[in-house]
Image 1 (cartoon, one colour):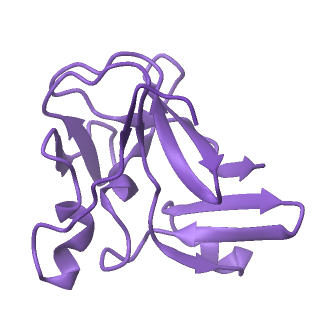
Image 2 (cartoon, one colour; image 1 turned 30 degrees about the horizontal axis):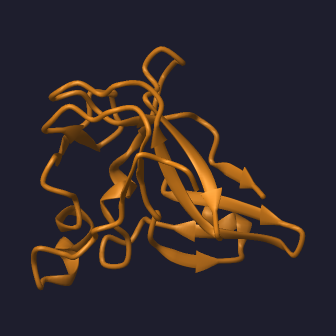
Length: 145
């Protein structure tokens, strides 16, 4: 992994388990209503974020059942030579702030690229993210090593 910055600091700011996902966000990320219609909550920049910064890993519960994984938009499918499994970030008690990163509606909106590294899902900033801009990944939720 060769990147300028890697953000891994996911210590929850609250001891309440139901607040865990939201409270793992770094100080320069806020969680509020998404700019994408009907997307729920989103992650927004509270400072300019440079190209090359990496966030991760995405946290959640590992599951093997594809039908269970398809129930909501919080799962990442990971495939390798040994098979597939899913990281389910739907439960806010076990996930982190990265669950609030929504998919872009088109390529021009996308500012993050997801990738798999050492069995985890990470996001790399692929274009500068401006103050108050929403962090948006691509539409694909399947990664292969």
